[in-house]
Amino acid sequence: MNAAELLERLVSYGIAREVASRQGIVRAVSVNEIEVAIAADGAERSLRARWRERVGTSGLAYLLVTDDADRGGSVQVLGPSTVDVPIRSVQCARLAEVFESVPSMTSLDAVRHVAGEVDRLAGRGMVVEGLLSRHTLEDRFRNDAERWQAATATIEPLRIGDDWRSVLVGVGYEVERLPQRGWLARHDGRPVAVVHPRATPQDFVRLDEVGRPAEGVLAADCHRYGARYGVLASRNRYRLFDCDPLATTAEWLDLDAALLGEERMPYLALLAPPYLADGGLAELQQESRDFGARLRRRLDETIRQKALPALAAGLEQWARREGIDIRDETQRAELEQASLTLLFRLLFVLYAESSRFLPLENETYRRRSLSALIEEAHSTGERLS
Picture (cartoon, rainbow, N blue to C red):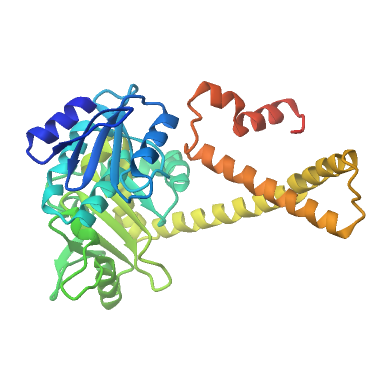
């Protein structure tokens, strides 16, 4: 399925209506106030320009798609809520399924649903929201041969069914129904996690009948039954929370067994007793915090010891050429402000390039990018001028 067939399927379902196509758009339809459009030009800069032109300040939910040349049966998507996100690749068939339930939702719930599902599908079954960092999961977990082999062995006997219990029981928990709501997962008799099953993943973000968020109710039950971790579950999808009193329920890890695929299935071991009952996840969390602290210190040292002195020297040379009296306190203050402004703008550009908010895949931009300048300076040993 390609982008054109995706929109045709939405129309054939009877859930989409045609809307007028604008310049640079091949076809556009609307599903419950979410506009889905095919861009004529798939270049990143063009996609972001088309998105901004269409949405402006209107608040329109706009999902812009284009065929992904590198992945058959997939589209690259931008939106629906903001242009300030990376462009992601999503399977067409999966995206069509996402829209099937949209007509029955309120407009606000529909936008949240589509945005969340795009994140999940692009993450290929794993979405990280602060509980761990992606660096920790990919470098400290997956690229650690010992950890990954152990995780592979843990999930090898799993026979994943449609019921959420198939994974938790399969990795070694005993589950018991709690008197008021939910289930308690135990290991060696110890309470490890409270599980609140939900009919659909959309219920993960819905308030209950008295206006309480699902994660808040889950955390309260974890404290009541002495379990550190909480899980919202729907069929093969699990959203894991650290419900320690010092933690925050705004951070979670979402795993979808149906999307992980065989190659990434060992990530399910993060739900297993070695990680939740025996401290493995807490160890990864500490490693993530330690890495972040070291990164901040290294960045601070680099800025103070290398970047600022080099900028100051360059600005001093420029000031002398321009006849600016650097002995004057006011002039020095302006130069200091200029140094900091330039530094923070450079850091912002680097962040935008590394997050793919800027078109690094475009060869013309790439040759002139800040990242390329830094690579050149690093390889030649020359200073940036």
